[in-house]
Length: 232
Image 1: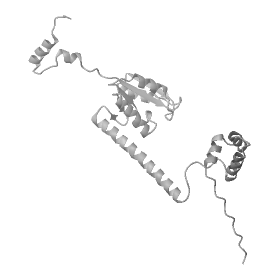
Image 2 (image 1 turned 90 degrees about the vertical axis):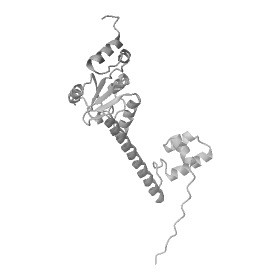
Image 3 (image 1 turned 180 degrees about the vertical axis):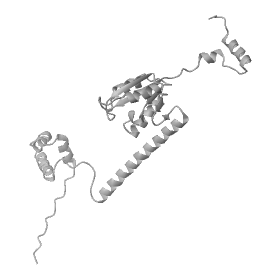
Image 4 (image 1 turned 180 degrees about the horizontal axis):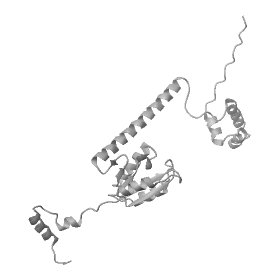
């Protein structure tokens, strides 16, 4: 190729011939490279076949597909970790179906937010979701709003249940590890100062933390004796 050719002059001549203005040489030189499509497939057990997912991802144009044979409920997925490490801004992560990536709606939203912050797109073939398009980004925001709405509903129901329980004289939390008699026995042994807290815990079969927790609770008021009622 001749080194004395001016790319800007070539653009001007092309514009005269074809009737349109083409980018100059500098604009061609600094054009943004096209990102890659990286696919992710997952099956839960070795008995399952990932061929259906792999074929669909290859047809979608993925130049490489990462496959995990592991339950989606587990946090550590080695092949997914490798894929995330290779993604660069402008790339797109492609899955066959949404549940291949996220363990739940909340987890999926968090994953997509991380990808978005890194400048990485996301596509799901079955649901035809593509966050590199305006419509796909809209769907992503709708999902995020639904997940937030679900979390608020759970919080409201939990608080309402706790309030109702308190109104009936019950409090939340786990049942006490020690009965009332055991707590009183622990107090007596502690006040006699003949045993350490750890030794008291060994006698009662609980941890030292449980003994401290029981000692820090205010002592329960003794129950008033019932009056014997005479038969009429």
